[in-house]
Length: 186
Image (tube, rainbow, N blue to C red; front, side):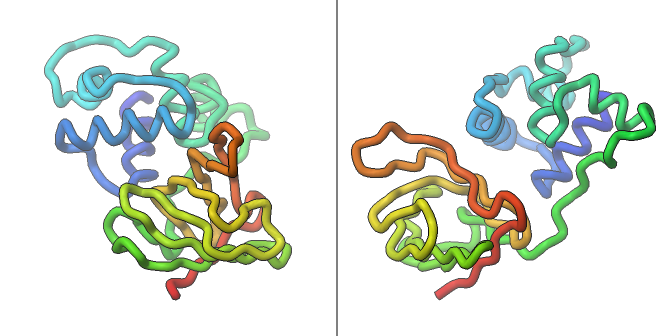
């Protein structure tokens, strides 16, 4: 079951983890998404990158299960075993059009985000996964706000981190929680 979980994580990332940098990036993603820390070394052990025959703790398995959308390890196992019968199917790889911020955008590129009901937000890419809002209609995001995001997937919610609005402390925010977001490059 652990190998299935690791495979599902790789599917959600859209790549195999093959270098220390990959594990560092996953560690950061887990911290940003779940507010839980797993070290690069722990992840490298799990994937067999470091040859140590160590069984992961329940806490580690819970964190990894939550990273791919389950309530925890118990739910992951139950849904993969097919019990209980009323469980929804496990997460699947994202197949929609996507924009990898680090790979697909240059500093200064502008992206329009659209979601229901009638929300429009234009953002400029500042580099290092950071954006600034330059125009906004019907959203809580305001001109001048900044945030971080690493992937925009059409039809899926957009999870942003470190949303900074005026003098307020930074928060996480979800755009298009129900129907997902659409995007276009301007």
